Image (cartoon, rainbow, N blue to C red; front, top):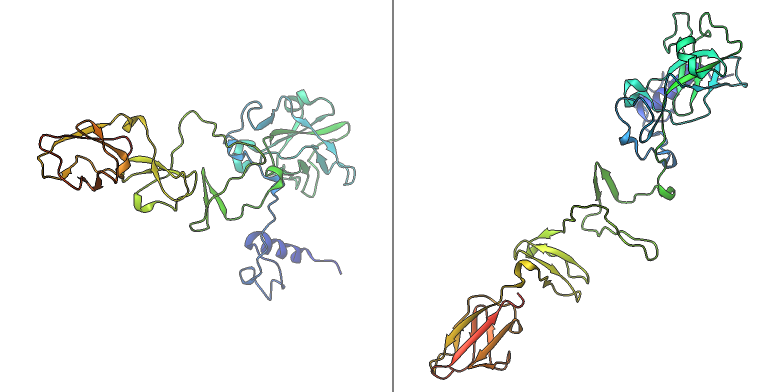
Length: 338
């Protein structure tokens, strides 16, 4: 026994309306009670990558990712010889833009003399999707580009002898399909212009093939990661960030420590502290806090002092171990590296 139309409709109702597979009759199990998910297949090779560039109103002529078939030059279809005569007509081209992008993308259908597209709209017969009231409706499959007179009758009063069906509308002609059919996005997600990963605290890796470079095509700027000293990630060779605690860019060159990156904003900031020896005082307070003894240059009476041998530092304090003679001129220069 053939499958009844009621069973076919129940299958489609559950599949399309509820995203579930049919496991029983409608009488025994209603659609909301079907528990096995069966989502529609979304083919990566058919994705309209530039669909967001389709305007809400169909343009008057071909533009961008939209190719227009205006009423002055509609597409002439061919009859499907495998179906009942004049029942189905094929454009032979796919990816027509449906009205979900805007009502003006609803195709217009004309029947006119074959080979005379230019006057199809002005001299031919326009037929409408809702029919003429004689059960002569049509349905256009925008994906396949096929028009089918789905009503019980062919268009009322139309003689198809020597004539063809013409379609006026628009097609999507932008890029289609994920590049190289790489459909697996792993833990990545896309939302608007934001790319994010669902893996907590995981690195986000971009890998070029061979010797390819990473190019950012823009004339504005790249914003580096920012954060406090406490928020620093583990040091790694090549890491660069902006430290909001110190107000400076910092990098890791050795993979274990961070070093401030010198910029024009802080490069020319060499200053000096001058102290006078009194024969007993061995410690003096500097105006800055050096990060290391090697980041300052010290002279006593014009003689350069060696770090760790002639002096040590702790915070803002420089300690010579013993007092310089009375009248000694002590010069501490800093700002070379912070």
